[in-house]
Length: 251
Image (cartoon, rainbow, N blue to C red; front, side, top):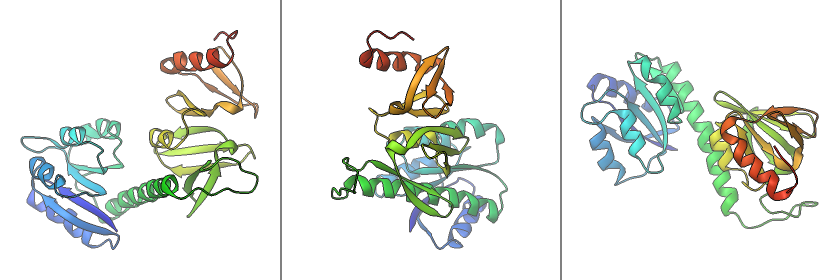
């Protein structure tokens, strides 16, 4: 079950969200709040997996409410104002529903949240599971769980050459030449990978440093004969990494 909370200062809008939640068996409504201040108080008493948050509310708007949360749950914004969409996605919202939205739109957004929660729970379960050694694999927990094509696959870190952001999706490029596309944000995927092995080199790319074959003119060349750009904000970190391991190198 996915425990959720609905927050909206408009009674009719709140009633609609509650009715939609009731129609989805996987959802459990833990609380329905008329404003963000009330929601803050309820969140001190309970933990939820998913928030449905209106934006334009008195006293404390939905954006500021989410910003103030420590380790916030997944968020789906519900609002009548389209101009907040970009800011909403900057807060890593799962989705942004523009009122009036249909049950189909609502259900589609919930599906995205459910996929993300399943991946997060699998990742956390792997992190706390007893150590197990696979044949030919000397490292423990040396893989990442990826949901794609209606199944969850365990992909070895060593098999990932680089990861590419495609909006709300991430594409993994593998040593076999295959790719896997999953509903996940690159920022969230980055936290699931070992920092000493993978590096963000661009807002849209993470590379496995063991597959880096060279670099030049703002590009990182990979051993599958592809290359990805180095973003300006990531050049210094990449340079420091290379200089630590190859002191004579210059970027």
